[in-house]
Length: 484
Image 1 (cartoon, rainbow, N blue to C red):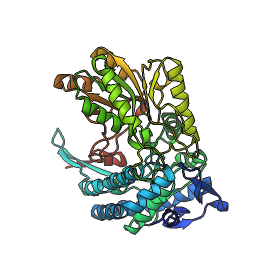
Image 2: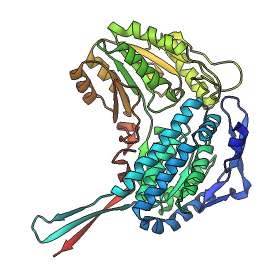
Image 3: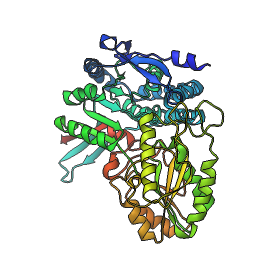
Image 4: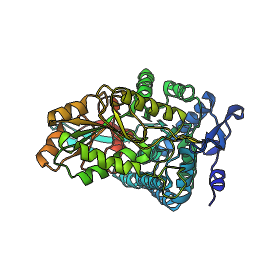
């Protein structure tokens, strides 16, 4: 299995109404390898006209798809799960080539994405309702759940297969048709997934894929069209706000998984070995390019120096290189803009008095590389205290009291995930309840799980993905009043 054969094996056209079609006018755009800057291939560059054609296909397929038996939808998802696992090696390599993450992580993401199809294959046959006697005894209440209808899905570049699976899985299970727009940096994983779902038996028109360099121009007309009934978006809070404004025009139902600014709290009584292991997971998963990445490390004074020493030792030893190379842990960032932003945030922190313990610089040569970095003495007015770093940088700030730590952790407009390391059960419960976040990692550095509800509070989003509630985001409740 060569890199060339893996890329050549993916359709490069739009997927509309069950067919692979070129973009209007034959427009294409380049997909680059972020480790080398070399062009991997060209894919179709959709126009607004192409987007409307995709919505036409989804609308046309909706009624029949909604009537499909739940077990049939379940079996399609189950087959897709099995196909993903069977092709982990080639799909993982494809993802590494277009996104840059180390091959081992890419393969792990394929398994993670597949789990969403398995989970929602089981949920598809458990869509429930209710039957109730009216309080006055004169009638009955019948409650059912029905698919919300044609759905628009927008996914990011950092987890190109998993974020697609997390949205497509429940939509299929619920009986919704879809138009999905993957990020322009990483379209190949989604195009490969569309082919796998077709092979698994998904009917034509249920899933439609539009790749484009004009996401606003292509998607806004679909949002304002009135025939789509839901938008699910994963991406930045700034873009999410704009999409919410557009959705208000037609009162579209929305799910928003937006930005994060995760605090990582380490108390004096924590198991430092576990805390450092958790820090490495929470910070370096996906090279730090994750909304769940630990963005601010708050460490109690009694263990701050030792924690910083151990974390620096671990971070400085991480092998860097192209994600296809054996043993590489730190791959390239997605593009030059990402490198520029990380560099600016580190420079701002050091200008304000922070000290670099390891890293702190870009890497000469091709590719979008930035060194794994640990900073200490980071002041709370540094930009990285309020902005997502989205890179391999761990900024450490010292605190003295529990109240001080919680106040600092909550001092942000975001509330996606928080991490807490302590061996004091009462403190663990107290702090977990007081942190303003949709998810808490208690003595662990990874919270994502298809069987758990993923989502945040405040400006980190609306709704939940995954878990028993994930399918509800794609269902409407209908109440029938029955007279006796």
